[in-house]
Image (tube, rainbow, N blue to C red; front, side):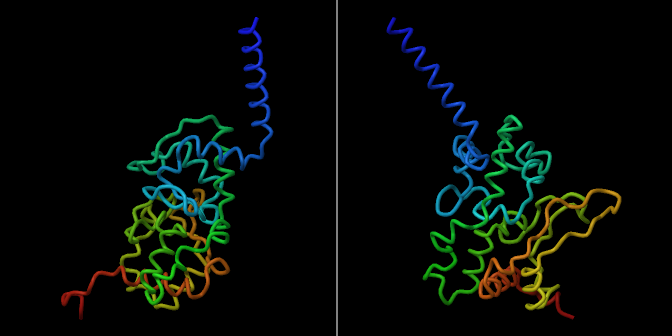
Length: 231
């Protein structure tokens, strides 16, 4: 009798838990899945999580629902050499995770403070710019140290550009304006769907001082010129 009562209670609690979970907002469900799948072992949000994968604190500013859904569904279909795991989850689970990710637009930094405003970075615009580049997520697309290599669909070259030689193609003001306004990539084939990854405009999100420092960091990536480079 006691065993039967225990099993009945357990079943009721399980049903209640499932029912309650189904009634949670998608964003809240997605956060639960994000933690249950240990995504935070590689990805950081705010001051919590790993650093092996891209910072996700502001991922909702960088990527669309469509791209995030494609990426989580089959990471290697987009980037063959990615170390991102294929979660192989049901559609509704993946969609909840996507809803959580698109909601992440840097609000956590508003509460905890921006990591690039740390006092240790005072007087170091290049170092400060590097922190912004990494924590705002620029490195997620342009690569660590701006080396590039991240794929994009229907763009010339098939990849997001490296920034190693940005100093050769932009003046300081031109680069800052690109950061402010962002950029929609030119299609390699006008008959095909446009690129899913676009550079967001950071005006109104980053301060002018932040944009100045990111530009200085990007210019610092250029290797020293050799004599052969000179006319």
